[in-house]
Image (cartoon, rainbow, N blue to C red; front, side, top):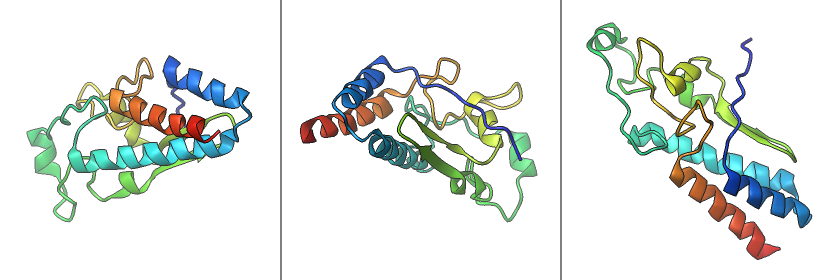
Length: 150
């Protein structure tokens, strides 16, 4: 079993909106679950577009990777066998939502290594924990819907 890696999201506008909903007595478990569902869909779409949260194209494979690629693989970035995308999930409670992968290799793709370019799936900047602008805008739009309904 692998130890999960926690990355905190740093978005003042999202945190402000969540705190306002909390003060209004909103059921935060439902809000957090909806955020998780929305982010799962956005991350899943990145496997189709091959673009990171900053809408930058993922770096192509290096020639050495192409040579070693299994013949029975899916022949697409971050999807040799489908395991990474199949492991995309979220967990939520009344205070937080966690979106991630059960595949430990996702960490290396999210951050990059000295031998592999970063191919971000979750964060615009994994070091600072910032969301991509479109992801943040999408979450804020979702939260505005809760304000309109309360």
